[in-house]
Every structure is written in C-alpha cells, then in structure tokens.
View 1 (cartoon, rainbow, N blue to C red):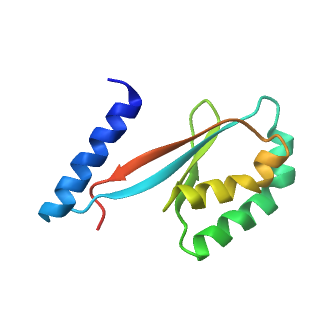
View 2: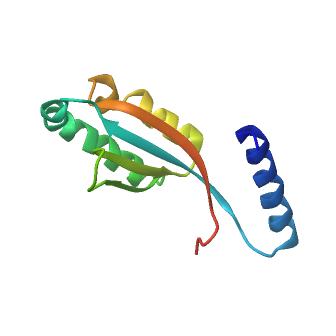
View 3: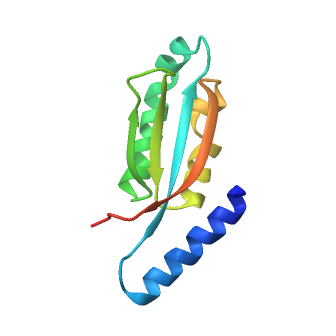
Length: 115
C-alpha cells in the first residue's frame, strides 16, 4: 500500500473511532535526528542553545517528550503536539542551523494509549 493511501486509511479509522466514542486517538508528530558524521564537537558547542529551545517548546506545551538514543546511529527523537510546532522548532534549531544533524525525519504518529 502506498504511504499516502495508508495515511488516508489511518485518518479514516481515527475519525470513525472518535465519532463512535470508542477511543480517543491523538495525532502527534515525531522528529528523528541523526548526528552528522564528525559533528560531536559541534553538538557540544551548540547544545546550550539547542537545550534552551527544547525547554521553551516544552514549557509552552508543544514538546511532549525528547531524548537521545543509546545505540547507533547516534541520534534523538522528539514528540510534538502538532506539525506546526515541529516545523517551527526545526526552523531555528541551532543543531540544524550549524550542521550537527545529518539526517532528519518528521513522522505522524497516532497515540492510541494516551491518558
């Protein structure tokens, strides 16, 4: 199944289940970062500004979770409440602006066990 078709099908299922009152599904946006090759020093240099940005988005309620992976490839994951918040975060993230991140990916995620 093509990814766009699958996304449309998931949205239809979500809409149906929400209208039936069976469960509430909350769409979240998960951002994955992979460290650029040789960027360890850059990461240390720009971490304070990156952390301040994380804290600001968390304080205003747009960033729910964030953390680094302990296995390879080195990277991190952050969960945002909306695509707009994730895109706003990326637009001025010091890690992206200064080459700390090699690969990034933003994905829709339907959180089905939310409290």
